[in-house]
Image (cartoon, helix red, strand yellow):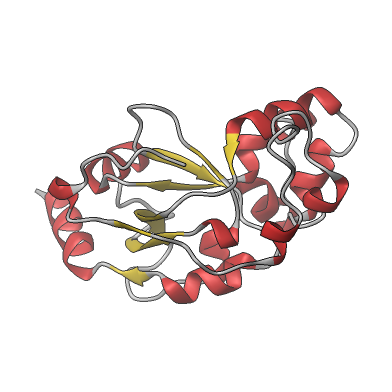
Length: 194
């Protein structure tokens, strides 16, 4: 479980996650949860992440050590393409997005499992700074809950950025649960123009 750090300055809170999903039914035991990502668990992810991990036991173990499978709902922000709507493609990892668009990427780049995640941030200020918001690719800031029922995430101490490894097809549901934060989008856009 992730530490419940003070989110009062962000106006965010964490709430308990009680829904049981198919992913929770095949979670590994406490004894082996850091040793392996089972084939059954791996099958829940998009094909690009499966391809990254399927034949490399060390990469699978590193992935298993990095991710947190069960965590409380966490309010996060994500930069999205449009300022007035959220698309399901806004919640694809870069590798999956490039694959679907037919873009070339190096095998070395594809071996980094972080490139298969969706970047989210607890701090809207850090999100704006790290994405150089707004730019030609992103014009909106979406706000919602990162939920473990849609996939594991990594939690680095003292970091507000998280890689969220969405299960295959979860982007279709997640995009409907996030909303454009019009006030933050407007303020950030005006600040960049100034």
